[in-house]
Image (cartoon, rainbow, N blue to C red; front, side, top):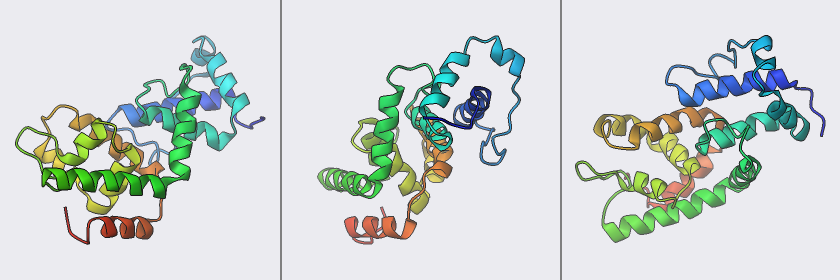
Length: 203
């Protein structure tokens, strides 16, 4: 599968996305992917093979998606050097292609757990994660659901204050914020699904 992107251009995209997902200040969208990179240092880094393979396998738009899928899955190298990266990308594609179904299933799990525990999605005892975060860390819901709910409920800003010192929240909060610009969905459709599941009641 041919692509117009060169291996060095793929490398620059990788550097920009890595800075975006792994630092607080760099915003790849605001910076339009601009980042300092040297062709000479790239040539001497021994990394060219990984990017050459990437540009031969995937189309230009897929290369960005491939890296986003792997960075958001926790791979600090964006999947470039991971033998399981292709599987991670395919899993991400399946979630995105069936996002409405995935979101609905995740809300069913959240609603059931909220009913069992008698709490709201964002309720938490002092020093304890709220239900929504426990469900994510327990792999009961996906990252995309966290992001969609943050778009709807804007819960992250409040939790940043109340959970600032709680283990795992600061990293998860940054991941939600950094992934949000890349996740496209029909807000009205997903809002309707949410309202139906939670009876138009605020959590």
